[in-house]
View 1 (tube, rainbow, N blue to C red):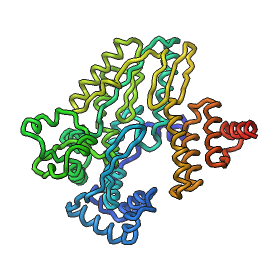
View 2 (spheres, one colour; view 1 turned 180 degrees about the vertical axis):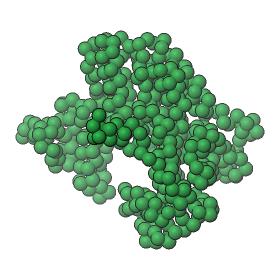
View 3 (cartoon, rainbow, N blue to C red; view 1 turned 135 degrees about the vertical axis):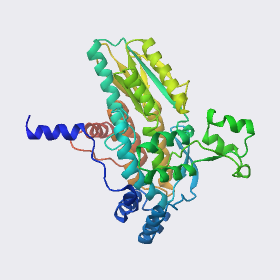
View 4 (cartoon, helix red, strand yellow; view 1 turned 60 degrees about the vertical axis):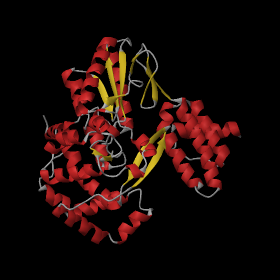
Length: 424
């Protein structure tokens, strides 16, 4: 084997080496904190609070370094708001700039590199080089590989959804799972951050409090129905993490690893994948897939997580089924047909009409709208038919009058030209 081939094998088979410096030196290093500060500014430099932090960033970073070294760091109070996405309501806690810097240091320098070796390849969410496109491509590969092995589409695919995933992560189980894999100089910070996620349940009776860890928690319902005067600080439930926190994203990727290991190692599932709380299993028979789902349900119960029975189901590979907002069908010739869900197109059409109103009242510019539409269509066009794309381009032109320029000789460039000819 050549030296070049040996280098390729070495770099591909082994994870990147961990930083061997003492963790406390890394957490308090001003250069590391400065890099974390720059990362935290990306995408939010226009906001008032990051700008205030930027004005005194040297003194702010020095104060953070001292607090981390003395272990006196405390998470600041943050704003809470409800975010609506694709018909779902999510409770988001907007972290302060100083807290976001600390999260970047902890996640980028400690959690991510030390937890990554324990993840399976088909765990596709919130990791560098991965994402929703990666997860969809791996799902499609598993469909193709099933046909190549069996030369038919007679198999089954099972889907499992973890209900209120972030709301029901138990802090004690997180500490039991994560802290042994990171140095104590970082584990104290992990425990400190989890304290801010604790839920004030002072309104609960003794019986309710005794059973709260085994009962599914809904942060939206809690936020909407439990009045502030009932949250007296008498009792706290050590469960739930904030979706908007970077630490929570790392936990969402790693925490259900026992489920992944059960499916891949214990049951030997060749075709299994997970994107945060969405799981799929492909098998030859319905009984095989059902058996794996039952085992996953037991593993989830051990973790304190809950299976969404309404969204957990089994479908034939020859039927049409949906995964990560895309509709798939495996034909008897091995072709994987992909279609965008019609409701996604309807939602985008409504957004464009809403953007028109926002432009009229001066809250958006035509450039902002073009950027949003270009991003959406560029991402979704691989799942759309030519007619669907042309209709979306026509709607954009009717509302905003402009014409988007795409990469030369691309599909979108060709269809835009066709749309101009028909409308001319």
